[in-house]
Length: 86
Image (cartoon, rainbow, N blue to C red; front, side, top):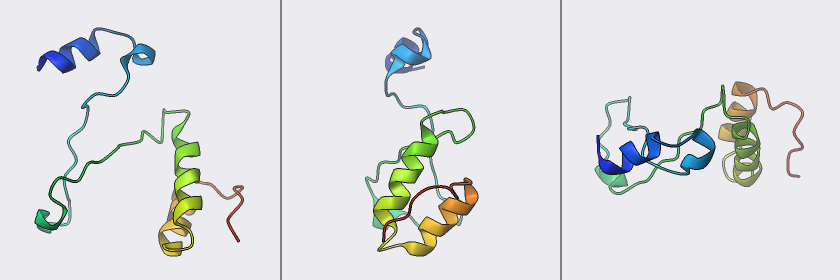
């Protein structure tokens, strides 16, 4: 383990802050050279009590330009009671 990960694992989840925890890669086989240097942020939709609010904010932000994505997220995560932008 790297020193950063060992240090992060030595403290409680609430004290930990951000650290590299996951490796994200494409699952559709496409080349990722067009997204070189992209940084991803993973949400735990099952156990993180703040993830749903984060996705709701994302839905609100992307609704006008990516309505299909917004609707898919609403359905996937049961966000049917959220207020959509007009």
